[in-house]
Length: 282
Image (cartoon, rainbow, N blue to C red; front, side, top):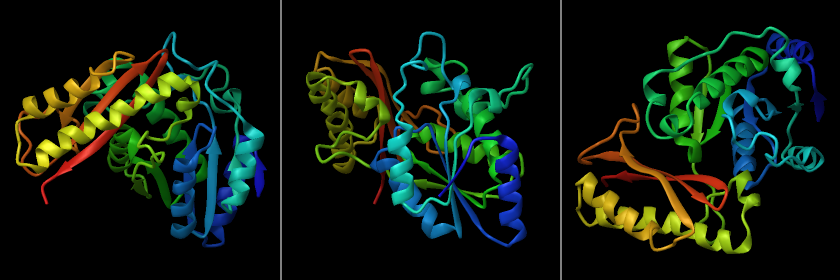
């Protein structure tokens, strides 16, 4: 596995691979890797001839007072995990490499970022879209793999690629959960034992609403009230939002006929967690 730290070296490596006719699969991450990330790498290994993974804690997607400085990091462990998954190139740039002095250009994907986390974290998706566009320009992948846990992010990246005529396929992969149902996240490491137990109510709430949907309920209000009821059973889980949205534009729905996304963000102690579940008519 080759470790690259500079923007110029990454550009040279990707140019050489494409000149050889290699198909590049790319998994962008912020590190502190877990099984969810590894599932994306496995897909990348299948999709392309060469697998590139990036680790970069992107400062532009963190708002004031958020956890940029304390975001978990363990580069040596991440390197071992990447090597174990057959990663060919690990790109680990510094903030100074990605955002040099006098940097001033940003990418703003508009409508799909307005709702959900876009309401709670102003500027977050501008930072996401900007760094992903930059990474795509450097790595020049044929395939980019993202997890569905950050579903709004996935939709935003697909929109970015389509609108800017980028020549790559964006692949979404299912949420990977712990055995007890908690969605895997690097931020789970913040949770105390008691907080982690409380966090299990997030997935219980999503499943409770899904069960009503499968029994025939189509009113967004009823489905959301059921999810809220279950979440509020656990006082340690403080709701940021829970919404039913369409899967393309991320807009609120009053009724669900064929398909929708039930998405939530909560705080458990000081930790913000997100999760979602699809409601789909079978």
